[in-house]
Length: 257
Ligand SMILES: [Cu+2]
Image (cartoon, rainbow, N blue to C red):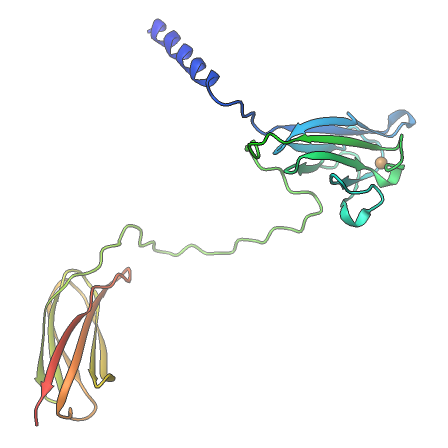
């Protein structure tokens, strides 16, 4: 047994070694540090890959800070095109941002001269792999993002999972009966059957009946008035409880004077 385990482990290691070099998405942390009078982000320079997340932690801060993120190519004074994050206090949850765009990013704390050289700022070099995001868990939403919409969708009490079978409608027949027609049919499962009587394209009478069980049933379709002489198109269609519908049966009924 022990030997087989060893062989298996060696095989697994070999399989891993042949996988393409796609490192999982990583999270890197930058700490706001302000003890000793020097206000810095540490480390001030990061190199990450597309898909990685950076967290700016307040765990080591003793004062308040904010965060501005400057995308590649945006001027440090062009605040309209920068991302502003609200002020945080020592011990607050970190700012968190996932990087999907390669390039040289800049960030700073506006409370502590961050845009100026020597201020509380830093850089993030995001390397594009050429193979797209490296995947992994998505970053957490930034703290100033609007609250996500609540999913208040209520699951249906009954799921008609798996019933994709339409009922079978057979032995459909129609006969004149009094002021209307008598329609008989056989259905393969319970549900409902709808019958439509039309003349010259206009519905004369429509009726829907419940079918409690599979089998043969006869339905009387009575029109409001005595049927005029002519040819009537009769359409019969069955549906089951999951709303699967049979193919319609089309018959003709001729009413003579
Ligand atoms: Cu600051």
